[in-house]
Image (tube, rainbow over all chains, first blue to last red; front, side, top):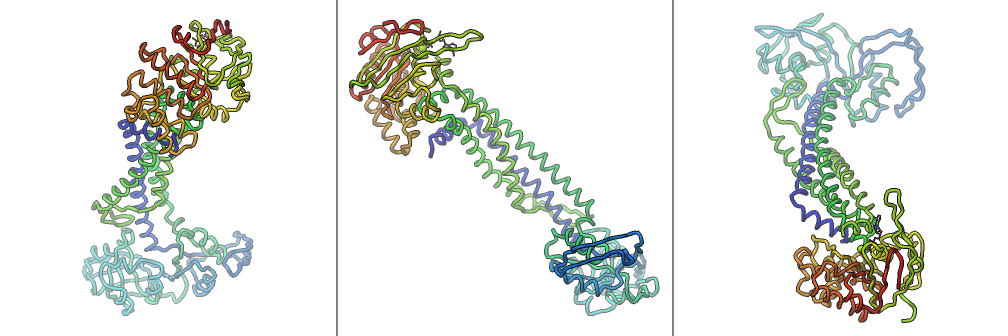
Length: 415
Length: 225
Ligand SMILES: Nc1ncnc2c1ncn2[C@@H]1O[C@H](COP(=O)(O)OP(=O)(O)O)[C@@H](O)[C@H]1O
Ligand SMILES: [Mg+2]
């Protein structure tokens, strides 16, 4: 242990009360930072899980038919090498006409781990007592399981029932409530061309109330008959091995197949931006606690350098270099910082756990029954980094001042 | 002991006070021999402390030479000066300047630890020095729980722990009663004799000054004897 560190320890422990105040500031700052990030990112995560579980990572829909004015050269790894585009003569086409071809070319994208073809239309769902308009999604359930979280969203019934029964239907729980429909009951679905008697094989809750209120799932072929269209007009919903890459992958897919391809980040940008703003603003607010405790600590050290000028002069006279003198103060900052980090991280983790147990019911853009928290090491590292930054500045400036003290001058003046 | 341990040639130092230059030392030359106790006397403000701080490398002279053990040191760099202060020069001030958060023995061990000794060995060494100065029972006391005379002896122990060749004392008895003054004087005299140290001591006490091996009288920044 260097003499500077020994001295630093003694100085810190001989000023327990002042040091405790600085320490508490750091502990609270770190703990609050961790808790606030855990909460905001916890709710964000629930939201993202909800949107990925309902609408998937990427959706491919309409296309601009371009009369030979786009030339694409796509290599086998899915990366586009050159493109010439001219949209002036483009013709807009609703949905996908030849899904098989597109599914084929998507095999060039190894990160795509699931593809579900969906035919979207509207219809009217009637129970024995009332009816309402609904968004009809025709799909193949085994494909759709791979690109959504429908299995876990079912609160009644089962996927097997739905799969077995070509006349099965899955309905959002708010529809079931509103139309007073029970599992296994028959309902009447009216489409543009036909109508069907269907049996409710499941009721789901996604947490997104727009979906729970409006959406129903039926088999793709049933949906086609409903609108009297034997092919075309569908969209593709994709699952990715790494959802964070969705914007890049979507861009590549769009460039290579010419269809509008939208990642979840682009699709849900508004809400994601809201969450981002919340996280950043709470990070800034809470960083102020750390900044303030840094200021307090700066004050403590600045006063201590003045109080200790004689000690500093004497240390210089017995062979401490200016750097040794400054390290006495830097060590003090480090000691308080390390104690603050350890206690702050523990306090933050405990507080996060306690908050995660608080019952809280949220419905709307997602659903949760408890305070959502997200355990992420990056929150802890960021908190530690900000604390370290504040403490470094707070101890570095006084330490530098200490190292510049002229010993002869101080000794002379104190006689 | 023919070659003097310390040679000082034509040392000058001035201060800027406002726009005026105060010449505190105006060409001082003398020698000090290992094993001798030299007193420095003169009226207040004549430049005694200034001389001692220059010799202790706490300040740099305007001109002149300080030679310790044949080496010119007044113009050496900060790193060398720090090392010389640590290992070759001991300094004792009128006020003891102990660090009150440390015990007596820890205060004394600091220069030894700074020199590179392990904490354990440095503490043992510090303990030995304190024993020699009759402070065995006060080793574990915190500095501010010692009497003035004891504190000054601890400060002397701290100056001695690295066995310096040169010990500089600026009015070490100035703040002590006559019994303690006598005590400290005898201590310095014995150290010079027994450990072969060149001791330079500033004092206002004429009686003490006259008992030293040599007296340097300063007036207005010049040596007058
Ligand atoms: N930092 C300083 N600035 C200006 N003048 C100083 C300074 N230090 C000492 N002096 C002047 O230098 C002269 C010598 O001072 P000093 O060596 O302390 O005297 P002594 O120790 O003999 O009493 C005095 O006139 C004093 O006023
Ligand atoms: Mg003086």
